[in-house]
Amino acid sequence: MKEQKKSMRDLVEEMSSVLCPKCEGKCRHIYSNTATWKSNPGQVSGRAMTEDVCDACWGTGLTTKTGWNLRKQSRINHLTRRLLKSHNTNVSEKIAFSMEEDLELRELLGVKPGKE
Image (cartoon, rainbow, N blue to C red):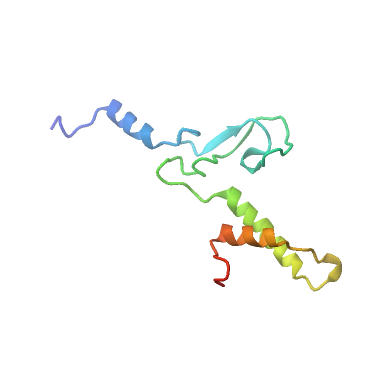
């Protein structure tokens, strides 16, 4: 019977090995600026501590399973909007969608070139 019971210390050690080291399993992280996970290198943001979803585990609190990558989804949304605007029939609102943007969107979506 004693062998089946785990001590509290054993349980804590076991849990700490799967908890996200960045947010400690809280699913939220306090970022040092207002850009949070949305920031890109060189991006200017406000100087205030800001709480948002953890960008290491993406809201699961675990190292074994991550949530949906919001940074990747945000980029997909941006490129998709640009692609739709490039096909706009209104000439004044039409924009150019570069080959680099096309390749990036395909890569983010997992579409291999020439496999439509």
